[in-house]
Image (cartoon, rainbow, N blue to C red):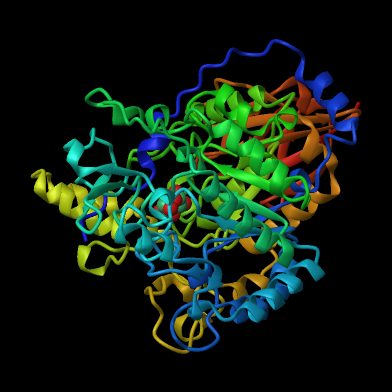
Length: 586
Ligand code: GLC
């Protein structure tokens, strides 16, 4: 197998948004929209929790998490207050990309359990008011999928056109970039004398969506799961599915603008509309997009209600921040959230997140993981995520403030992407010490360590040998300890989820940024009809003052990650990473 390039970093970096600023008063517009019942949806009001199944809870001692492990923790999920779960892929797969290479879309990988276990797990969630979101990986299949094996056998095989091929008698195909494969996006198959296309690893051949039979297969897969009762779909890498199949030459260096050249192909919207009619509408489910094109207009075209395509945009601008060890500035952070909110104030809907299975841990990238500030800085970030407009997506472990795992040596890495990146950097003659520092900080393996349940061996995750080393800090950072501590990250998270669920203003209220140039404190209001709340977040490790006329009218403190709040007239003095939400009196 060839080495693998960095994951979707490239796409994240190239996201540049060009739609013009809106001028209308956001408060009025949003109040009106929020009153409109067709605008209100369960998936807008929900709080989503992402589970990486192989790292959540193991019940059979094989070192990998399983469905029965999730079943065991259903009451935990209910206690969190979350209302949606997105689970990463658990289908039959050779696991080259940890399940994002599916060899049978209607079968469960045995290490997770059986279809009956799946059903019991999902039913258990739904009985607790938690909706289930399935990860649908249909830009590509695994090269071990029966379709691909058949397609390789001969050009006459009926599955040949399920994939993109370039007949070798036409010479070498025009270069296509692969996000995971340094040798490019085409690979040769001798048995049919053709090159096949793969946007990701060579074991992940792209499906040919131009073929209506492939699209019917996809809808059939989605219907299969919708009939089992899933409530939504997360569409993996879907923006790459439509291609110009004449495969014209692309200019040199085009891959720096990957989303533009490879995303949002000519028939994408037709396909999504077809999918909407075939699956989304009749089964009354929703779909969240992974990636959202390169402009605000692209994102709107994917998710606005009148488009009848997808329902939530999950763009990469947020996690594009803080990619280097220098971190990010608060003004960049405010700008990115504010511009996206502005563009989606009237129509469309956003996912709000700062972490997932493709990025390192929330507190390491956006907060302060030092023992002194880990707790308060994670609480501050969770306050932020749960008080923005858009559906909040929390990644497992971030409700505890789980941290990166220190992995200075390449020998310990198992992710194909990390190993591949290392090989590439070495071949380019890079400074490998610097490279390892960056990998240690940025690698997605940081976010895949076993869930820390208690201080027993392997953090209570498994009785066997965990597939990935448990973070050494599990003896102090774990669910059992945090459940007992009223001031823990976990209990703050639960309070914050409840606050959001109890206050529609935090879901539908207009967002207004205040004190824009303040480099230390993020201040904004959320307003819905006659309810207004003020959110104050100190992003620094020292005290910081914020002065706003509105502070004179503050009323009840709705949440605070410290015992008190020092206020004098129109000034608040915030402690390090202090996060408060206060109601505003009229
Ligand atoms: C998505 C997934 C990522 C995976 C890739 C290929 O970006 O989030 O984990 O490697 O698709 O399927």
